[in-house]
Image (cartoon, helix red, strand yellow):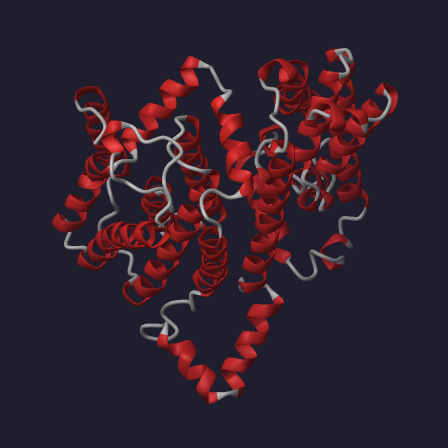
Length: 468
């Protein structure tokens, strides 16, 4: 049975599905609950099923608007009636900074914060609650709440609805591919949630961080290890997030590479996913993938990073220059060693890749290092509340670069996973090493000019030079 038919066979009746959409929209907008409910994923899945069942798009949008309006209204009512008690409730009693951020956002944007808050993840579940606590006029709140819900529903529901309507026409999965796609998707979601939880626990408010602090105070030997990563203490924070990333990505790389080496050729999933990628016939997608391949090759990475490396040299940021340049060089050398160790042939080898082996994907590992470290360096000069956007932007850039290798047929899916894990290992080691030298320089990098220079150079590379 086709994957889509199997999934849709489990779908509820149209009336129940609309009720589910309204409930998800309500919970996604409700105070505190919206933090833990993966609303985007759930709404996307539910609206896709609605599109497949050809439920009226107007009924779907109405359900979403009602749910979103009700969720924010309940949060507003809660803030209005329980103003004095809310700071003493869990989780605000443990994380008062959440209320502080909501207050700051509301104070900065006023009435407009109700509309903006629907589309800003970190403060979305708190703004209506804060508006109630700060005694915003009810009539004004409900008008803005209704208008913002009308704008929010199409943005969150229509993409999934259109996908559900056209999914059968877009692709028919080959036998076996659905099993691997479901497994990979579930694994990525589980790993993402696990790493997010682990990273939170290592933050200043996490229990694991508190335990490590106590060990630091109670055990001199552990304290010495702790201070090794601070220069001088307590000028820099212990790089717990980077340590966690190194341990998890290194363990994943070792396990994944071992599995690859134990197989004589591609993994069972590789052929199924390769067959699926070969069925994609959209010319624009293949052309875009070829362009991304040119951006991620040796010449592309060189011209992409040249303005940034030259600026670091000019600004005498030698520690940053050596770490960034060294990471790019290191991942290149490690890729050569891994490719020779695995000795795996590519599914397809064009002329410009003659003699090049498959595992791991050098494009993937290199772009993860380049974009990941760029995001990390950018995040350190950004306000704390905006740093997550730097990392999400990096993910949105790296994912298409990696998947383009599947579309043009020069890598197996397992090559991309190995390349991504290798890139994360190099990123983590680089960040841990750089921690001792991390200082905010007097000059802020001219982000706009350096970015524009990179865009111009990479455009010239794509237009004037063939792949190398």
